[in-house]
Length: 86
Image (cartoon, rainbow, N blue to C red; front, side, top):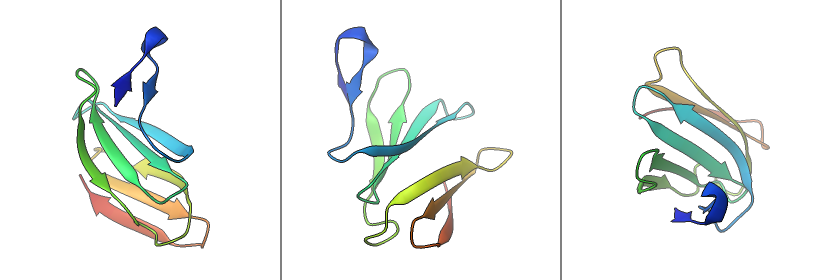
């Protein structure tokens, strides 16, 4: 995550489709049209995890966290839903 003026960051090579904040882990989670999900520490801006090809060639269109923020759910344009752990 590259910090820029005005607290903007350059975090993905492709267009971003969704951004979430995990208040328990103090992380930002972002996805892009290339089916990549990235995890960032909010305090440092450091990328700590990245998963590519999460939905193959399909674009991730939505993300959500479960109630206790331990599972990440992603949905894509091909109609699939995936559930993962953080």
